[in-house]
Image 1 (cartoon, rainbow, N blue to C red):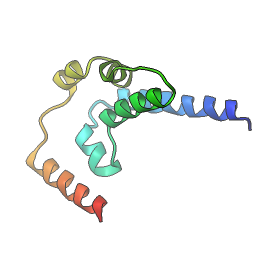
Image 2 (cartoon, one colour; image 1 turned 30 degrees about the vertical axis):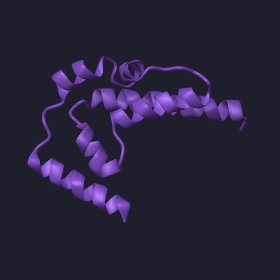
Image 3 (cartoon, helix red, strand yellow; image 1 turned 135 degrees about the vertical axis):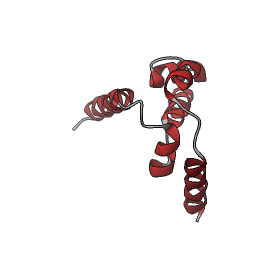
Length: 100
């Protein structure tokens, strides 16, 4: 497999992940952080970092529009309820566990 094929496959996987997350808006970022250690915000930041590594300038807001399919503020208003005390406790426990 060539490097070009590998890059094409990786890009296709990212597109599929974004489609999957878009189809499952009920999956909250905090739950993703608890279970997987990353969320849609992380993907946005990784997008910006990847651009910077390649000498490209991508604004975080633009990256969020790419990942969320809308502005982050709009996504939060439409799809992100406030985290529950239980979610916050699980998130804190997951953060502590990942540091060990």
